[in-house]
Length: 63
Image (cartoon, rainbow, N blue to C red; front, side, top):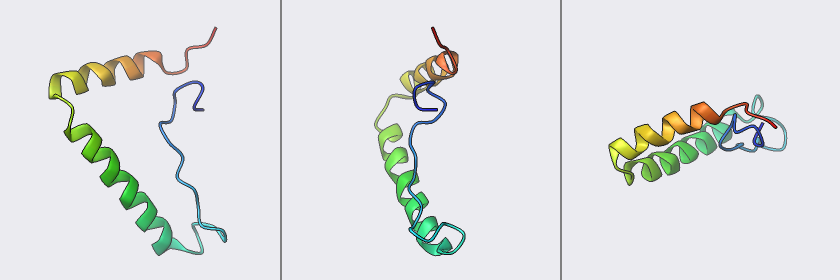
């Protein structure tokens, strides 16, 4: 999925699974969201929109 640019990142599950350690998984997801929001906040809004359009236009493209 990464090669086709369908996902940006994969969040690892706790050893016994996200369904068994939900609070731990929620904390991991929350931390990732915060990281990405900080990155996005540092980018000019017009550039962000342009990057998003480019990202979606390249999804699933193969040679």
